[in-house]
Length: 442
Image (tube, rainbow, N blue to C red; front, side, top):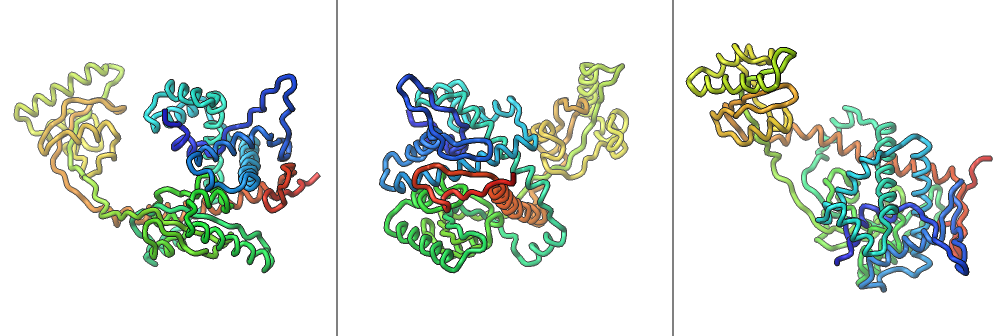
């Protein structure tokens, strides 16, 4: 069986499964602490487990990985940050229901072409505890919700910003598949620290040019949150990426990597995996009429359905649809217009209307169908294909600005809670740069 976590599962959990203390037996040394994080700890068993997950991804090319001590420091730093985020989520009341966890598990199973029962069996066959896996899914959902809360509370996009983005021609179509490596430059860095970061970025580029896999280089050199996933951002709309990334990739062929680029947080190496352009945003619109028969205390749903069917038969027998709508429809807003709904996109009135109208040709009258409002019959008057690119531009610009600000704000949030926390690293050989610590106020 192909390892389930080799693709979707690792990208979803991303070293995020919660800690489970190692089981001990007589003669087995007790699990030791490798970091203290406020009132929590990181255990050696946690670190070993997550390092094993990374090495499993490179089972066929272990030489691509950094030395064990470097990899341990990378993984430990991310475990520390994650514990701080989870603790903050818990203290601020971020919750995820069991039903939401079940939905997340079902989605993971579906992405791997399994049902949940098969997912459980596959995990067990690989020696992974299903309950622990489930806790990891819950934790990731909690962190997603925390990220959303931070964005909603801190990010605002003004009309002036949207106007400026559009006016400057910075709302472009298309998507890029990119990855990146970030070599951090600390706040208030000395010239020597900047030079050292630049040297490290140059070394990473040299190794990649010499044949090192980009994902392996990201694990070895990158300080970004996605380093342990190989630095891969996946497909993103161009405008959700930093402008420097877009500018750099314009000059790249697929598979190429930039020289180090100086950014606000350090030096970046950007790899272009691919580009795809988007044409016109064509949307099918419908001009339709409808008649609504509402159930009431005196008219049951079954009776309303029968009435709708009877009205339909009268129209098929020759009665004018507009006349029937004015006489029979319970939709006060459209009855006086002969049931006219005007032009609308398929999803405008919900999936039930959309699914029905897609199956009709011009002039057709649907069978009675039910929505929350009651029983409907609908007639398609005409259809057209419309380029919505201009109409969508403003929404696109707003989303671009929001996503950019949200990334920056969440990065600042993580750095803030890290700086406020008490972090004591006890991993042998770890230095302050690998896992910075600052005592919290007494």
